[in-house]
Structures are given as structure tokens and as C-alpha cells.
Image 1 (tube, rainbow over the protein chains, first blue to last red):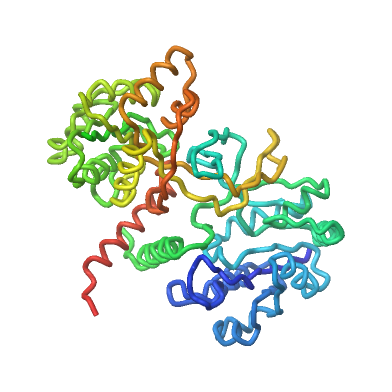
Image 2 (image 1 turned 180 degrees about the vertical axis):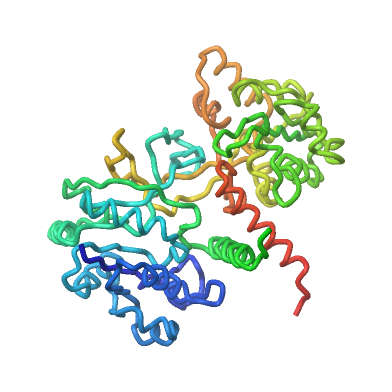
Length: 231
Length: 231
């Protein structure tokens, strides 16, 4: 099946402080969006890469040479608007991988696993087990209860779908005005089956300056490992 | 009030592979337990440090000079056994901070905040917001539902308690044979009020080799920041 990556990169990133779109913030000298584009561009099966950004001209300037590897479209006010606008730009691709630019360190093995599971089952997401105890809070910030965590998972991206499955879920959600915090949520609400594959810690979502610092630490370590002499 | 730290370090860490107790694995050349001991030993208000370990002699050898800063006691088969045995060794301390050795990078500001809130409210835990979408899975690994995450938090340690509050919660739990994955859970079940303070990403729990790698990356980055010339 033909495969497209749709990178959602229009968010303001208010928790990062600053006014620059979050996806254009530099991580190890490269904008997060450029890293995400690079991860999908390096995959031999991905034919089309679309990124929904706040301002295509600003993104083009920030991406430099990487801009030639991606079709930039203007995103919308909400995440789901951006996905819908991006879906219009992926053409006839049969599989679409929707990815948040805020996860710039997505490893190849996750892209592989999501593609394989999406082709087979129609909808697939990478997830991580929850190793911390989970609490539900009251409005006053005190603990209401401990939530059993055995069957809980933290969802990551890319989330992979047969394009017809995702388009139908979006049409249904728009009719109902009922959106979710991720794309799989819409497929779930439409009664679709979403399978899971193993995510990775390194595929963290960058939401705060502390997350960005952690990601910088990871890529510095990766760079040193790469340049370390063998033996 | 007088304050003790009780470090739980008896776990096998089966997800780390290897047979060595997890708390004795080196992180940046220092056993995780030694780092945790150092964090509490550096705090001017903490008078007593107890660590419940699998084998006190093995721990003493691994800790080297840090062993003089901590009372080592033999832990039990389960985490709650180790906490109970540790509580017997903290003497008359009025506040106890129960900490997992698997969180070796606990920052000073979290220790401060937990002490202050525990003194004031009797029970306090550091928590982090959940920035990933949360899914509940069926037994077959497919997604059953998306879980609203606004009022969910990930609990960290140290968890701080008035010692009488924690002892009473443990007595009640032992009577009922009803334990939790963290200490606050026992206080909650006893009807106690648990307040929350802001945790930190750097206070991550090391459960898998990927977590250890992330922690190594963080301390390497901290070390470089410290040695970087100003200006």
C-alpha cells in the first residue's frame, strides 16, 4: 500500500513560553519539524510527507534544505483542523501516519511497527506502559483515588491508519462536533478497532522546557555514542 | 519537626535484566542508591537516613564512603515489607520521606516542597501532569477507550508523611492484607488526606535499560553545564 506521513506542526506550544511555533524550535541545532521530516524521509516506504504548519513561509525558511522533502500546508486553529487540512494534501495514499512534530526523536522501529500493524488492522498506535502510580485528583489538588494502571497505556505517535478509516472517523467527528486529543480516539468513537504496538521512551513529546532539555540530553548522548571509537 | 528519609532499595528490578539489585546499578559511575542517599544527606533538615536493601553487606560494599551516611536494614520480599522494616529503624522522627532508590536524580526543590507540605498537611506527594493521551486496553491489546486525563497525575517519590499517619496506615493495611503500589495509597484507603506538590521530569523512575540510558544522558548534560565557562 502507498504510505503518507502527515506531520501536525501548527501548535503554538504555549507551555514552552515564547511566541515561535513550537515545531520550529531548535533541538540540537535543527528545528523539531526538520527532525520529524527527516525521520519519515529516511523511510523507504514513505512516498509523501505533508506538514500542517502555522505559517508555510516561516516554516520553509526555518527548514532550509529539509523544506524540499515536505509539502507544507497551512494548518487550522485546532489540531483536528490541521489534520483535516493535511488529509486533503496526501492525495491517494492508502495509509497515513499522523505524527506530532513535538515528537522529533521518533525511532525507525516504531515507524516500521505502526506501518505493519496499520496495513494489517486498519488503525494502530504506539503505546508505553505506565510505570508510575496514577492518581486521580480532586479540584482542590488532593488525591481522590489511586487508578489501577495495569491496563493503562500512554499513547504516542505516529498513529497509522488506512486513509479511508481515518477520513470516515473525521467526517463523523465533524458531524458530531466531537473531537479527541488524538486521532485514534476518533476511530475508537466510530466503533473502529485500534491495535497497539510498543512505543519508546525516546519518542517523548516535547511540551515544556524540561522536555526540550531532556531531548537535548538524549541527542547529545546519541551523537557521542556514534563518534566513540569501537573496541 | 524531626525528619527521616527512608529509601526503599530492596527490589530485584527484573525489567532491568541482570541479577544485581537495581539500586546498586551504576549511574554515571555511582550506584543509584548512593545518589539517592546523597540527595537526602545534602539536605540540612534531614537527620536520619535509612535504606532497606536486599543485602546490607553487599550494599555497604557498593556504596563505599556513602555507606557512612545511611543506616542499612534488610528489606522484605515485597515493597511494603521493606517500608515496614525501615519504619522500625527511623526512631522517633516525626516526618518520614519514603523514597524509591529507582529515582536517583530527585532534585532538592522536590524534597523541600514535600517536607513543607507533609509538615502542614500530614501526607504529601510529588506529581506530574500527564501530557500523553491515555488509553485503556482490552486483554487482546486493542484499545478499549481513551481515558480523560485532565485530573490524572503520575505520582513520584519522595512521599512525605507524619510518621504517625504512615504507621497507622500500614497497621491498617496489614490487618486488611490490602496494599497499594505506593505509600500514599495506604493513607488514601485509610481515609487520610493526601496533598500534591509539583514533581519533575528529571525525577524519573528507572525501570528499564532505556530509562537508565535516559538518566545517564541527563547527568552527562548536567555535568557539562556545570563545567561550561560562563559568558
